[in-house]
Structure formats: structure tokens, C-alpha cells
Image (cartoon, rainbow, N blue to C red; front, side, top):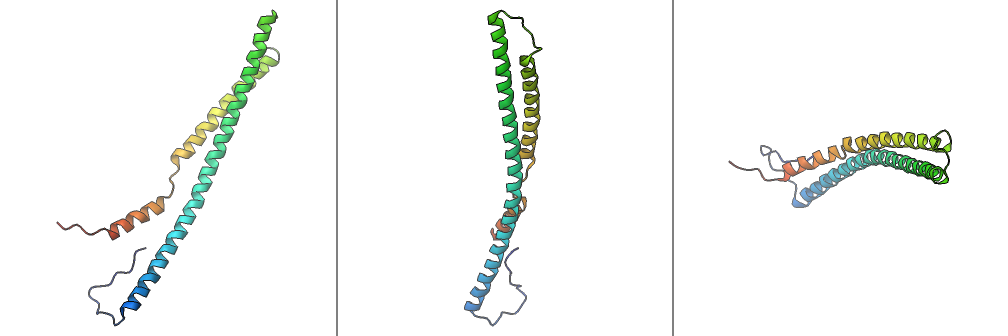
Length: 145
């Protein structure tokens, strides 16, 4: 996607400055339009990746909050049994709350690890960065040794 370069072996064209500038402007516009299309495609891909990452993170944090609330509720029930002098038993709602809290906590860990992996493995705007690098090489003056 570079600008057309004039072949040094070709004879000079009879076109004037106005025609040359018009051709340069047309080539530049075509180049920018192509850049815009590439950036649009990669932006849509990036939005999809980050949307999945954020949704999984939200589900993971939601599960962690539910786990925390269930465990705190179970601990309150156990403390109430201790202070009231009742027998300490997990064969009631406190045991169920602890079990559900630990299941939610395990699910939160799995979901958050998956979300973290998605965020780490995502290579965003790979082609755009490569095209930028190519354009920078094309625009930079050649170093003479």
C-alpha cells in the first residue's frame, strides 16, 4: 500500500505540476481510504475480543461477590449458633450456604482465569501496526554506508 514511485528509467511524462499533484492527491486518498477500511475491520475484531473479555470478567466478579455474600451469611449463622449455645452443625442452611459459596468461588476463579487468558492472548491491531511499520520504512531516508 505505498504510493506509486516513478521508474527512473522511464522517460519524463509530459504532464504538468497540476496533473502530478492531482495524481498524488488521488493516490493519497486511496491510501487513506484503504487505511480506514483496515482500521475499521480490526476495530470491530478488537471490540468483539474486549466485549468477551469484559463479559467474562463481569460474570467472574459477580460470582465472587455471590460467594462472598453466601460465606458471610453462613458465618453469621454459625456465630449466632455459637452465641445462642446451640449445637454447631453444618446440616442446615449454614452448610448449604458454605457449600454454595465455595462452588461460586471456584466458578469465579475459573471464569476470571479464562477472562485473563483472553485478555493476554489477544493481539489487537496486528495488521495496522505492520502497515505503519512498512510506511515508516518507506518514508524514512535510506541510510548510506
